[in-house]
Length: 183
Image 1: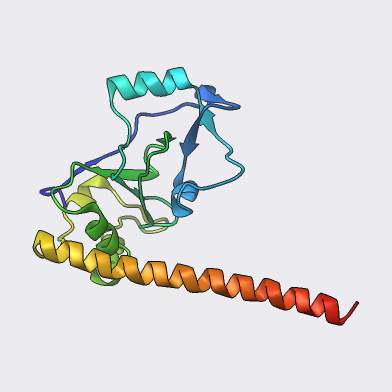
Image 2 (image 1 turned 180 degrees about the horizontal axis):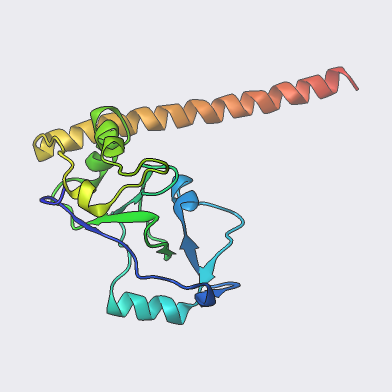
């Protein structure tokens, strides 16, 4: 991994930097759920975010974040929203010389997930470190093949999501029928 991407962490945010509203501050739990929560708990000020962005940089769209403590190996592809994240709990993968969607797919299953989890260090509570993660061997087919593999899995994900929505609608319809039958 260290040869095909830059691995980094965030700058430390202290308890005193938290504010009641502003730029979302993500931990491993938010990344595990895609950063999508209706009741975001932690924020940093826009001024703090802008200062960090100017001095050190912040995650860019297309970067990957990996949970490194607690629940290990959950990945999220950064989208267009502005946020910052907790140091030590997450590893940022950026400046990839490989298709980020392929890397996301690779580490989400099979041998890639196994290599990621096997690289965790520690006895009681395992953790991923950037040192160990840089040493992970990743199998890369050609760019064209990477795109085809990712397109195939994206198609499967889309089909699953479509059927899930269909199932949810049918459950709602069933509930409505039951309410009408047993008034």
